[in-house]
Image (cartoon, rainbow, N blue to C red; front, side, top):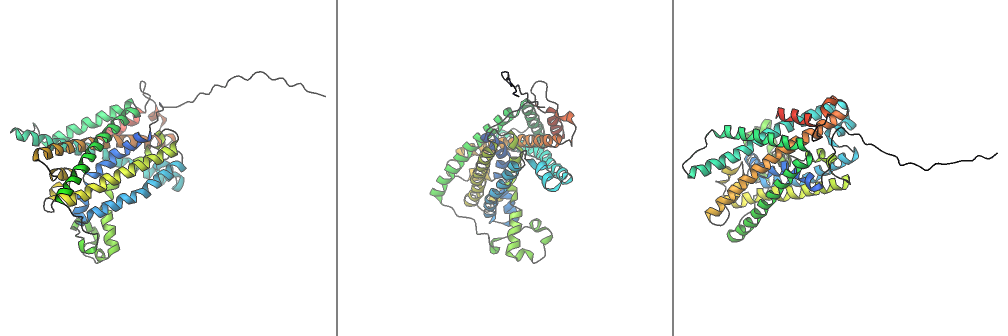
Length: 386
């Protein structure tokens, strides 16, 4: 018995991909700009904080932390690629369960929610100080207290990035990319001018990180104060590194932007990590050493909150040029701190999106914006808290 098999011409299959939000993917340059907008601000003040805690050997600890960030970068890349969706929630849930994942996400969101307004107010204080100094030359003053001026400007920054993120990730990453481009111009000018100053005037390296060169402040030792532990080299080094880890703040955003990176994701994430590491190592690490080399020891405490501004005022050249460059540094500091607000919003939204996808939060939060297709309800909640 034979069977006659007849086949009809195959019809093209239509595939529909259903999503809750508008998909938007970014290049590794844009992803690096988001991370560096937060991490880059660490070049301005962690060196001063570390020096207050451990003494003049602080630049070596900052350099050590930045070198250690290579390992942190590798962990974020591996965890993001291994668990596909990446992020703190997915990584911790796979390793330690849902309860610990929720606790971890809560801690991260607490960090992001605080980072936004703190960075925004710091940016406002930078501009308030610059405006007060400029107006002072004309025998005028700010129309309000600096704190009030900074708070109003901070709210404006947060609302601005809320609107940009509501429109879409590409719009907010445009801002981050432009901020880092301006920051790079400032960094190139700073390093070139500083090199000329060191060649003409000379300079010196900070003292080596040995026990003889440590001078811990009372606050730096904590419960170790009054004990013999600070005299042990290993413990003294741990204390020094502990007060320098702020220089690495911002690396957590690397895992949050992974899902938004364009294909091939693993390779572009690796490129993002390399760009972030090299940029932060050169920028943050060099600033601490330049501050120790160019700013006199008795003057440097005045610039602990903004070491780059202090370096600008101690470069070779006419005072007018140095004042102009210092103003440029302050404006860049304002921009990069404002960019940290954007990074906090982007990171918070990414974390909440993953939590919602796992059913922890109601689907109501994921309803797309009618015009822009973004998860605007997450943004509204985050910015409202900030």
